[in-house]
Length: 91
Image (cartoon, rainbow, N blue to C red; front, top):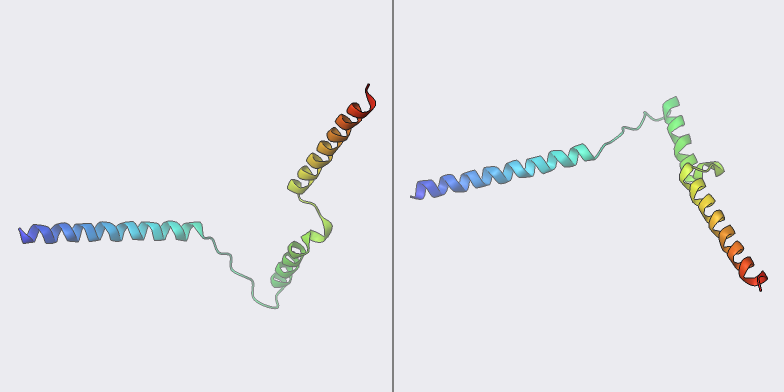
């Protein structure tokens, strides 16, 4: 009987080890890493330039999501002003 208990315990440990390994591999696949270019090269300068642009909000450039949100706010404010104008100026 003690032999079967050891076998079951060993199988359970192996199953847990497989589960941990699968989680580890899944985590490795999720985390992508891009290597930085060698310092002082043209690629490094380009990388630094693009990172500085991102840090400074792209020198005033608007990405699509910002433009859409700005348009939505402007339309909403216009509609609000229109509704208020109707309420004020109608008898």
